[in-house]
Length: 551
Image 1 (cartoon, rainbow, N blue to C red):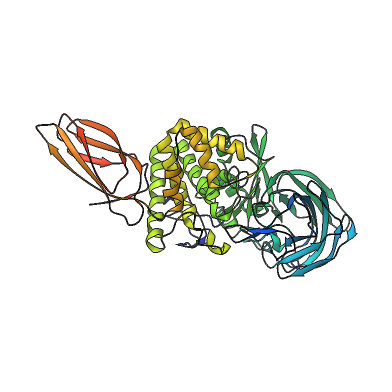
Image 2: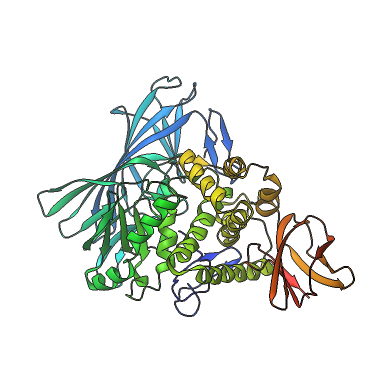
């Protein structure tokens, strides 16, 4: 995803991100890569001013692209549903493009465009359940979000790059994931340009003057940061399908063979996640070589990958798995508040690792998780913080690397506590319940508690809302007459005392005994009967807990 932070030290990952607490540079190698209104409004915890009483149902985004002078002409239709009464104006996020005209129900409407806010004054009086249609005409050169530039081969290319709130720089919208909508793109571009966007291809029409109109439509609601268009001279590869979902690659012609190699496991990933999580949520899966600033960006049904990551070496296999996993988590089940973005990034990170577990075995999976753990520990040493930090209200600071690596570890620990059957049943239920909708951490907790058949508030509180991790010290003594070992577990970290089930592996000559203990206090001693004095005792031998050990 955007600001994509891969979870492991593996040569198969390539990334480029700078995140608060994590500083990263692009490389591949030994390490992987609104306006105060007269209507009621509420602030999300992430600082975005939500507007009560309206819901965007659909965007129709008409674009005329002129790749040579970097200017666009736009016509965005917005279908608005009213969920409240007394609403006299609709605020939209919109950047510095020039507004030419605004219509409501095909009648000219008054508006104010100040800064990055476009407020449309409504003519009618509406009650809950009513709808109206806005149409905004505009033109100019976007300063962000939509880039018209040369690709790495010197050819002109146009790509949207919206994360996290850059869509409004090229189409008026409520640019926050809490308000998802369907979208239709009607793109006019020169004949030599192939256009890809969200959803299903509706039609391609050849016009006069060497132009072509391409229409894509997503009938599934998605967040604005995933609404994208890409246009350049592509070599399009139809790679097959799984369960009726077509998979295709949109590649620069010069990189066609490299892309075919790099994307070759996409069908396998689609099948794995569909089986593990639930039905794929979109009409297609397109993997697109692009000029995204990120290693990969999970745009719904049209994933954009960094043009420089396409090398024919499969070093971006982890990135591809991560972004495909996002189709379920982030795109379909979307956080309704940015403070809960771990529901997107943590899930994609962990399910990216699960792909490696299923494809390459448990040892490779543990290697990934250990690499992830080391990245987390280095970040924690520099800038401690929780996954959910309600003190942060500036969106540019909300997303941190903890949402990725610690978020992935939270799911791993939850799996360890619940067991595979209950955990994956819970994940499938969570996806089924919130598919194409929004969710918060409490929603996930409720579903997982049902499948765990016990409360998990203690787990989510300490791992999502608290800072840090346990630091365990293990010592033991042997009582030969009683044939007992006394194992002392002390928690040495500052702050919260962690409650976790812990596995002990007690090894003696020719024999290994495993015991599960419940660590709930700062200093506890557990007495375990054994036939022989142990030669070695290992805490958490299967690496289910995010922790440090001290001597």
